[in-house]
Length: 119
Image (cartoon, rainbow, N blue to C red; front, side, top):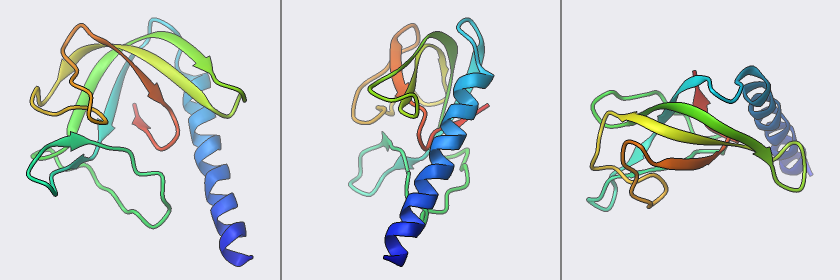
């Protein structure tokens, strides 16, 4: 019961943060996305941490910076489940897939805003 309440509260915070970012940025805005990179299996892969027990601080030597332009804003099934489509203009590491998908400069990529660090 306590775990459920804590988990529910944590997801409420994530939902609040994602909606704040959704409302903060408009189509046409330039954004910077920071993503942790998992290298545990000798492969690089940008991932999302949406768990309250995961502490993550950006590591410039390892993690991924994505810069781009918001081309679309949308939600799926609920206004708390928000997404951006971003046209990628810069990647600090071209050898790093995002959630196992290869992305190149000029590509458009959909991002769920839940658990995503955006500036």
